[in-house]
Image: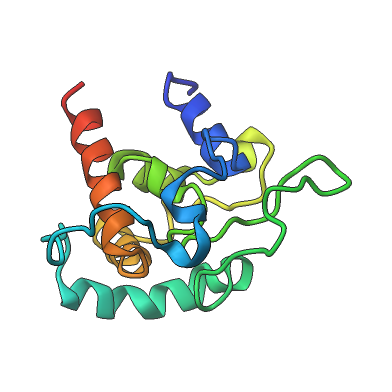
Length: 159
């Protein structure tokens, strides 16, 4: 069933979600010359979720997104077949541009129906396992990136 969320999913899978070299994640060393972020933000997940998500990531995601979530070096360059390689999930690509609901949906439905490579994990992983997996991924994001994501996520959930 096609719905209005599939275009967002397609954009997230192709790495075209408004990513540019001016985003905080693309700055040298992930740092800014602006005011530093306040002390570590309170994140939505627990350390236990991160611990449980690590093995899930290694088992289901690392083969494409690399064991450290660094993705493919040239993830913004299409392959000869026109598809994009797996992006980093460590806060240096576009994953943080998407609200939690979209990230969950991407893992559940995958990208194959939209012409991508990512398989669907909705029949493999429970909702709790998907959240643990996302906790592990987001634990690799800097506090600055997480705070920006948190604001975007809050706005998306108010719609």
